[in-house]
Image 1 (tube, one colour):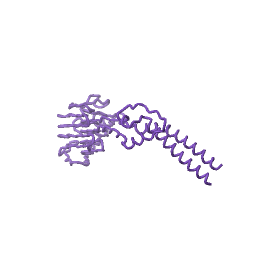
Image 2 (image 1 turned 45 degrees about the vertical axis):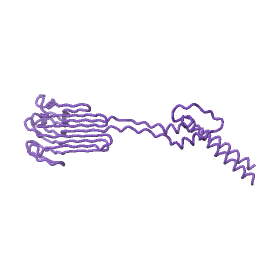
Image 3 (image 1 turned 135 degrees about the vertical axis):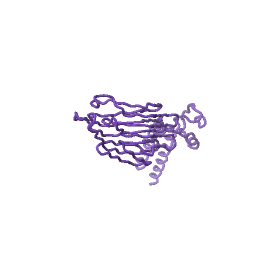
Image 4 (image 1 turned 90 degrees about the vertical axis):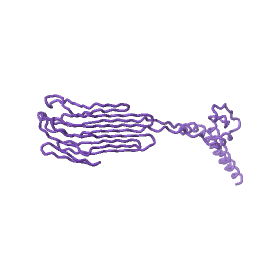
Length: 311
């Protein structure tokens, strides 16, 4: 009686193990073998000038936003425009005013193969804000920025500055990096962040000058101007490296899988060079797994049966 009770679960276990191996085999191998690379092509962008200013008007209770950019390009593009004007309702009776004048204002962005690169150059430039038609926010000789991102290499970001600039009519000596604050009584304050660079494993960004502006000209119907001005900005992101092809299974594993086949299994024609070498087909791993499970379960049943007779 005890022998019967031990043999029946063992047989059932063998059947269940075989069914489980056959059902789970395709799904398990499909999950392990479906590695798909989603390659990004990289990106690059550049801008000579970008503003984000709020202009408060004397005859209105709201601020008029001034958001403009010069030579903002995305790969593969380039631009060399040297003059930027803007119209702002309620300022100087609606007449256009000059935001930037420069002798050189270049922006370039390229992505070729495994390399993304962008650069900007601004030279002999004057930047103006509303309400200060004669006084420049900043005057400078030359600034540049560059960002280079290449697959498999450390991204690079750099920016160059002149020795000095003129801010709100005041000559200011610059250092290689850091922050400089300029205050002009009766006009306002300007904070300069110099040579801002940032890199990650795949990206790089460089800005030659970032100005935080707070001026109160009280001219041309302008009460206050607050916001930011960015000069010579370059960014890039490296293309993603292509995924490596998955290595073929080891020969020893293939041989073991091909040798362990249950009797009566029908062999199908191989569909590739690898299958021709091993003599198995795409179902061989699943059948082999079921056979192993049957053998293990059968061995356990025999051992238990003998133990029952002995008792």
